[in-house]
Image (cartoon, rainbow, N blue to C red; front, side, top):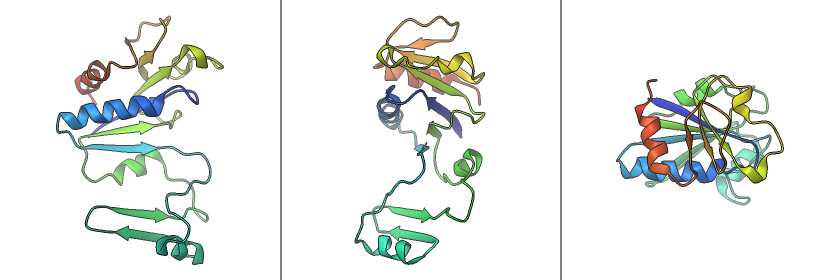
Length: 163
């Protein structure tokens, strides 16, 4: 299973890039898994649903299942956040896993840089595992640089990598 990260500062276009790459890989009949890092609390269940009520009543794990999809909610209040390595192990059937966020983890990453979002230094200056850039501006680097909407070239670059 190939694992590639998409990193960048807030509002740089990471999610939009992920969407384009996911659509490209799906069009190639590849099974795509994704992992998204979120900060602090987030909700995936709606207030008032039975599963939401189970969790609020104190269930530490809740599984919601139907004939179309299933989801598991694992309350981590008494536990540490899962490592990226452990999250990847939870993906059962994927040819490629795209990871959004997790800047400090050791997997290969593509950095997204927007000219109008240059509040901080590019991550490739400090992260050694950034292997390519997606940007709307020329970057001072020897790394491959791709345009934002070139999902096919970005996808083919990812598929050509050794993991």
